[in-house]
Structure formats: structure tokens, C-alpha cells
Image (tube, rainbow, N blue to C red; front, side, top):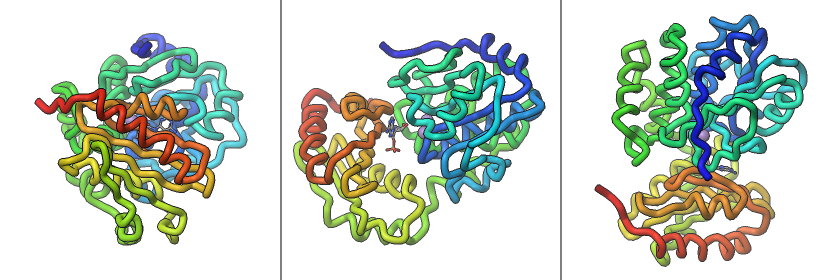
Length: 329
Ligand code: AMP
Ligand code: MN
Ligand code: MN
């Protein structure tokens, strides 16, 4: 069953009653994780005397341009809060150590998300799987509150929308997404800056990783795959964006319906990053592997060697290709 509940009023009442708020998001944060968290943070610091925002490891380099990115705490080991808001995380584990600490030290938890695979944790739900990003859920919530929307709120929210939709290109983009973007731009968000610093930017060392990974590319049964081994990743810290770029590029291959990149976290732990063309569902495979995500963009972290995990996952993806039908209209 898909969780689809947007209890805007209850969520707003919880914010207004809180003297202290903690905002957490998912580990290995992407543009939507940081964008939705900072959009909330910059909106709520005007309403609440004490607001904390935290994610394990802090903000990735390429998102440091966002207003108050330097306020994000990389480690959370002290504090008590009336309210915790979890954003862009489909399950509790995805919020890492910061989320675990926060849950144990907060009275109430708001679960704000847009993943159809959301597990329904927390006390108050603001979960809308019909929108393209958690940032768009924050935007919808903002519409209900009538709070002030300034550039510091608008810029992170547009970043979440732009990065999760790969520049308004996924099937999750609806007229409402463009209306949200229009309103955020009219409040000072810069689409040009966001695009240049996120989608159109990568350090050369990432291309260097691609050079080492590309010989592993295989195409079979409509599934295109690549491996990024530990050796391939020498000198790379910015792992999340590196994977993202490669799997998105592989999805463009005409002969493939599903793309997957297997990245070694350790010799016995593999991160899966999956993308599909419209009409093919990779989220079921992600769920079966203990992860989650969306029909066309999903992920999971699986125990086992590269060879073992490939042997488990590739047949499931081939099956997903068989069960699907290209739906580009
Ligand atoms: P990625 O390929 O890492 O960019 O992830 C694509 C999508 O899958 C995102 O929407 C993530 O939220 C989701 N996802 C990735 N890894 C996991 C995981 N371990 N558990 C749940 N969802 C995940
Ligand atoms: Mn995310
Ligand atoms: Mn998201």
C-alpha cells in the first residue's frame, strides 16, 4: 500500500507549538535531501527559537553554495527537541545516526517525503508520492502556511526540484512542478546557478573514475550495467554524485530499458543505483534488495561480493524488463 497523506494542518500546528526543531534527511544526501532540509531550515528559523539541521557527514561539496549549508551539522551527539522533521527519507534507517539520535531525543516526528516506498514511520505524515521531489512537498506545505518565502528558502527548494527531476525531464514532472518552480524563481531562486553547479558540473576525478569503470559496461536482456570497484574509486570522496552521473548517462542508451551501476562500498558491500525508462519499474527490485526509491530511480545497499550481488540482481532486472513496456508519450 502506498502511503499518501498530507496532514498540512497537523504539521503546521506541531511547528507552531515547538520551541525546538530538528531537521534530518537521508544519508549520502543528494540535491533533494539537502535542498528540502535547507528550505525547511531557512523557513523555520523565522518561526522557532531553536532549529537544528543535521546529516551524517555533512553537506557534499557541490551543494555548499546553498544558503546556510554551513549550518548543517555532520555529527549529532547532543540536544533534545520538541519536534523532528525527517525529509526525503523513505525509511528510518536512511536517516543514519543523526536520525537515530534525533528520534530518541524528540517528542514528535514529522515524516515528510515523496517516495512511494515510504514505510510510514513517525507521528505526522506529509507524504505525497505524486510529486517529483521532497522539496516540492515542502513547497506545498509552505503554500498552506502562508509563511514568508525569501530567496534563502526558494533557492534550496528549487535545487531539490531541479536535481530530482534531472532538470524537469522525468515523468514525475507535472504542470504543478513547473508552477512551483515559477513561484520559487519569482522569489529569487536562480535556475541558472542551480543547473550550472549541480547537473552541469563534475570534478575531473569523477571522469577519471568513469574511464576505469567503462570497460565493465555490459548490455544484456535490455539491462545495461557497470561496476565501480574500490580500485576504480581511488582518490574520490564525492561518491554519490559520481554514481548518479554514470547511471543516468547509461540510461540514455537506446537499446537499454534499465540501467544499473554496482558500486563497491567494501569488498562485501555493494551499492546499487538503478534507473529505468518509463514503463519499467526498478523500485520493486530495490525493495526486494532491502532498499527503495521510485519506479524509475531506485537504490539499495546489499551485502555480498560484486559477483554475488550481480548474480542476484541482474536476473530480477531482466524480469522487470520482460514485465514492462516502453511508455513514452
Ligand atoms: P541513487 O541511485 O542513489 O541516486 O538513488 C535513487 C533513488 O533510490 C533515490 O530516490 C533514493 O532515495 C533511493 N534509494 C537509494 N538507495 C536507497 C536505500 N538504500 N534505501 C532506500 N532508498 C534508496
Ligand atoms: Mn534524495
Ligand atoms: Mn527526493
